[in-house]
Length: 407
Image (cartoon, rainbow, N blue to C red; front, side, top):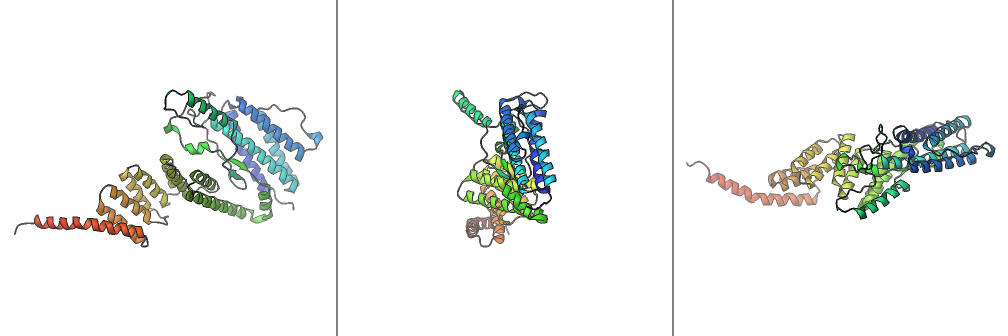
């Protein structure tokens, strides 16, 4: 491989190191989590793995570390900082040759392995939100291996369910007291958090496992000056592929799989479209609060995207909030970006039908028909409404004559 600028892989090194630094900040600087046995086990395993990597791919045997490490998070943090600096120096001095690329990619993946376990621990014991790394060359696997902490918590939950006297219990794998671990007080709270205090509950459950493929890195370097365009193209393609997988899963009624695919697409590009689709999937799983929450996120992401307004109105309508639903349908009608513009009119017609305002419903359905003239079911609905309204109109006309002035 020719000597080329190491910038591409350096960027991935910085991203991985910044991610795990955020986790170290949460576990060491902002809390007392580092004292947990789970953290000590993680540190010991990660340090052994990193040491082995250095001994086999970087140093000669006589240069390798002989004495055991301290096996705590502070020691692991220092090792990762020093090792990342070493990898950067190797890239800058030797260029991205095959051996150096392999060592750096393996180092990045070892960093992400440790970060994954550490992120699970942080999520198990706190409500601190840790920003994920940016998806450039790395890929996200939402089905990473289950952490020991989560497995232990599940076992505790099962035991608690058996021992619980009352039927009312809130068992959630990752639901802990406000901030869970208080940054200033350093104490741990395992008290369940009320539902109203939980935001993005589903996002708290999914901690993805990030991975960098050596083949992807080598391919990106082969593109030379066009690597930025190539990366953007890759993200677009992965977004489209994940989107397509999600739609296929919906057709098969595999809603959890669809949600995983849409979540993956969201990490390549967070769009109003993908947020709305995630909300729709939650609605199919009868998780209406999450469905509405994602619609609001989509509107915040892109105020011009019409389907988010329409879907939110539909969810409110299904809950009997007719007047509130009509407000969102009106906003959907005005949204500039809407391919199927007939939908909010159809839904508004449904809303007026529930209020027994058949005339208003007919107006809405008729407007929808002008936007979708080939919609057979809509034609049928409009004709039925016209027939049901005609006798009422005739009776109204007779009453007007009878009630008219006597001449």
